[in-house]
Every structure is written in structure tokens, then in C-alpha cells.
Length: 172
Length: 199
Image 1 (spheres, chains in turn yellow, brown):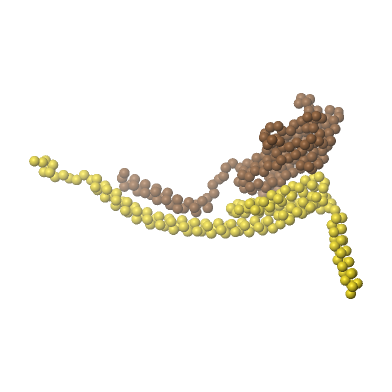
Image 2: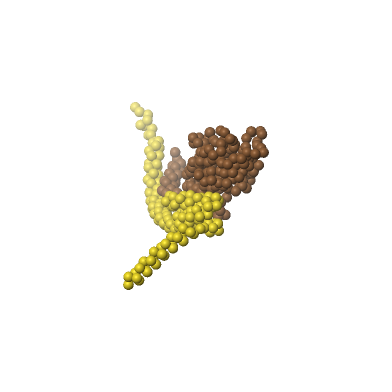
């Protein structure tokens, strides 16, 4: 039993060591770095387009913009490292960049839908209020016009010169 | 005032009141056209002013400038600023045709900017490994923000302006969703650098 335990412990330790060792020894070639860079570029572009769409419907995209900005810096670092021939660094930055924008498209789409929904609700409420307001205005303006017309006619009639009898005018 | 005038005045009053009642709904439907859409690109000197730009460049000495981009395009934009170096014989971007310089970029900055937002970055650079021979100066390295870049540029002696001139310039590119890629935004700024032994 003791031997069995020892074997298992040794096996686990060796696996961990092998895993770490392989990570240290792993080198990235130009093609891999280029692929990672292209993936990161398209991921960032898709995220950007989704954020702009959300922004166009009036969503508050400041949080998403912040993520985009970090991703953009990371992508620039990846691209610069690639231009300098530092493929490992380029790969690491590109992978990190892809991770940063992961899920950003869905977030932007959800935000867009949410904003559209609330906008539609607001529009409905606003349109309903306007309709009620306009109906009231129509009814009250008709009543108002009748009253105003009556007031106007009364005032005009008061201004009409009265016929004065001849006797009254002559005097004694 | 006769009754017809009063009727007209009353009608106009009711119409104005109706428009005021409708205005919140109309504002949600009608979008007014915005102002002129454009982007800005600039470089400033070490004191953050448009003066004292580095000119006479001594090998290995570090110089500072500020690079800025401003967005007035009415929405969030995705920009790339490409850094390029050229000598007097190499082509600049063509402002008339809106084409970029055919030279490859040596460095880049990527920026996302919301409408009316400004991005500014202080850039430090130095030129290294000068080799003066036969009326020319070969500059092998540009160190930009602590990144050493092989440029291998040869500046020829300019008898008129008395110097070995290289130009460090920045091109602004913008992401175009129609072509799904970056397009030259027809804006560039540059600095003439005279490679010298002493300041």
C-alpha cells in the first residue's frame, strides 16, 4: 500500500514537472504568432463593430470601450513585437488580447437589445402621452374657441354705437 | 382685429401647443444631422507646445514629443497610427490622392476613441548607430518607447539645408466597417531630424 501511494505521488509530481518544463521549452514560430495575431485582430474588429452597433441605438458603451482600449493596446504590443521579430511576445500579447475581447460581442449585443427594448418602451409611453395630450388639446380647443368666439361677439356688440333718440339729444 | 384674424391666431396657438406636446415623441424619431465629421492628428514638442521640436539629433540622445489623436466623427472610432521613417528620396503620403506612403511601418499605436474624445501619448525616441561615410549617414536603429527597431536608413548630405535628414512621420488610419479593414485617413504629421555628431 505504501509503495502504491509513493508511486502515485511520484506520478503526480512528474506530471506537474513535465507540464511546467514543456511550457518553458515551448517556442512560438512566425506562423503561429501570425495566426494568433490575425485571430486577435479579427476578434477586436468584431468586438468594435458590435460596440458601435450598440452605441448607435443609444446604449452606454463606456465599459465596453474601456475593454476595447485595453485590447487595442495589447494588439498594438503584439503587432509591434511581431514586427520586431519577437514572436513569443507577439503570440502572448495576441492571445491575451483575444481573451480580453472574449464575450464582448455578446455583451454588446445584449446591451443593444436591452437599450432597444427600453427605447421602444419609452417611445410607446411617450407616444401614448402625446396622443392623450393631443386629444385633450383638440377637445379643449373646440370648447375654448366657442367661448372665445362668444366673448368676442359680446365685446363687438358692446362697441356698436346705440341709436340716440332725437328728443333726448336736443335738450330743453 | 376681426373674427378671421382671431381664428387664425387661435389656430396657430393650438398648433404650437400641439407641437410642444408632440416634441418628446418627435425627438425620439427625428435625428438631426450632426456637424462636420473629421479626425485630428498632431505632434507637440517636449513642453507640450507646438515649438522646440527635436531637430538636430545626436546619436543615442533621447528626445520627447507628444502624439495626439482626436475623434470628431460622431461615433466611436478605431484608429491605428503607423510610425514610419524615410529619407529625402523616399515617398511621403499623397494628400491629393489620399494614399499612404508605400514605406512599411516600423511601429504602431492602436486607439479606440469615443466621439469628441482625445488620446495623447508622450513618445520618447532616439536614433542610434550613425555611420558617416561618402557624403551620407547611415542610421541603423530607432529606439521608440524603449523598443529598439532596425531601420537601416541612409540620409544623404543636403547641401542646401546643410544636414543629413531623415523624417519620422505618423500616419493616421481608420477602421472602415464597409471594407472590414483599415483605410488611410489622409492625415499625417512628421518631424525632420538632422543626424549630427553634436547638438
